[in-house]
Length: 351
Image (cartoon, rainbow, N blue to C red; front, side, top):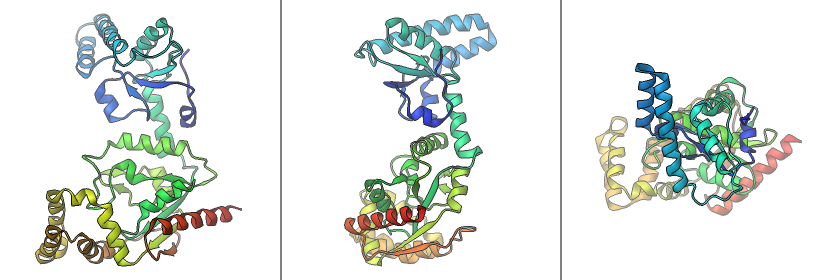
């Protein structure tokens, strides 16, 4: 009997050794259950071929050819990725909607003696749960926003909160983007659906009665949209606004953006995008700082001339007034102490 899940919490608590996604690689790349591995029952080309035969020729012929392809592909997986699994191995298998692909794979694995189960409804039922949490229903979690200008070490404070045992949702990490013009981290951002999967599964592991700390963002991080249920909760969440001396912010920013420092061509391209905001003379001055390696001066200039004026123009309609936190510096010790004080304040407020 297929395994039926009602909530994402059920998925987090699954008593299985592996979650196997047998959809085609392109389907898996767009989105999948976090933690799943991809063992395709059909490749992208094979899936397209079987689908064409089903529509243009004969459903029976399509099923027959599909069965042969699935058997061949599962045989290859058994000789490679699954070759070393012991007799007590317990996987759960899913495809698009819990149909023939996952059913066929579960049948073969079960015949071998493994305790394989099929996920009822497949990826489609999982995606429906993600959508319910992030789009359809009010988010049950208690959010606390960490705000402040660029370079005030908001992400490092989230890390300190996480280390201290708090519940932390790092949207910028999940979006592979710092939320600014200089923001892309790595080669590309994930798909919208994969971003939402990571957000939803992270939230599903949290206790809704305890605070969840999240950095204040706009409703978009790079090209990704913050899902509406989460965004509506963020708008009205209590907010702590960080400030710190300019030299400390510049030092932090120069360290935090080391990937840009190591890629001069990319840094130059990004600075060029600021000409329309600040003029050629100012951007050429910044180019000069970059070429001479004076990254702290460059960071300070960007904070004073570009980032802080833009931050001051941000309006947060319906948002409660922020609680100010003036940090004397941005050392690890200061951020750890601030994290502990925040946790204590939130715990006292909940009493």
